[in-house]
Image (cartoon, rainbow, N blue to C red):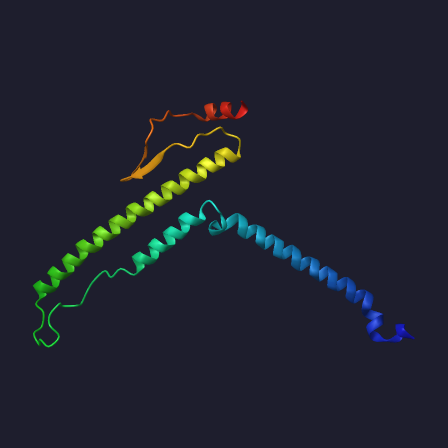
Length: 163
């Protein structure tokens, strides 16, 4: 008598379909999670701090005004600003913005160089290379080592790894 009721007739088929659909959703979710973990740099724990700093610098740069229409005269004055005064004001602002952008450019280069150095060091250690962390700092476009460093070839790195 129960098997004549539509719900119980289709229950086996519904149960199989439900678990099959649940399995597909889980597999799709796991695939997306793996893809994001492998390809989304912001989720990489070694790069996250540097990327956050770079994002903050980009925000600071985006808030910078590249020109100014403020004529720096009293509000009750009716006189119009002369072209030469306006050009002088824009040139002064240009110099200020140029210095600001140059400082941010150097900071970006320093952050990226340090992130690359740290990521390389971690990669080498994780893959069995006996790699000492060099005391390295970034100054004016060049990586500078505090200690004198010897250049190590790929063969020497491989030889260290096999020891």
